[in-house]
Image (cartoon, rainbow over all chains, first blue to last red; front, side, top):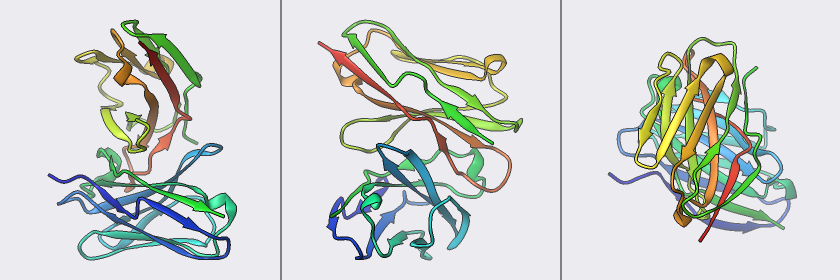
Length: 115
Length: 116
């Protein structure tokens, strides 16, 4: 079974631009979560989607948004990029219905550099 | 509030040494899950183990073993006879079993360097 895939793997943007990252979960998984990893803050939860609905959201500004499609694929968008948005963005998937009890499997991440 | 603490920022050992990575968690929930993930330089988080709050049995998988003690809120990870390929950042994480969310709360990670 294929794992979680994320595209693109690397991205360079300039301040003020916007960016869209994509995540395809493991086949059959309906829950997708996003995490931001930075050297200073570590791994932080961004948001979680299940059946096209946002189920939970972390403490990030409104510039960070996401969505999930009917095939469970998910995208996250960051508008008006700031230097501090430079990070590794990780997507994770799980089966979904009982998210708190399930194991999340992670993709390889997208490394975003904001100049 | 929930919290995970990995007090060891970096550990360096020589190959074949045993090494233990510490993890202490805080939660008021009675149902919760604990995880360990490994992050090699490539960046992907690799799942190692999941434990629920009602199962305090220790687990061994090859050279890896885990010691879960609710009395001390700890979930420690031991690598026996370490190898260079074990070099990575290791994260301990907590999720709350009740409620409809899979949000993971991570510790700051422990960087393990195994020297040949």
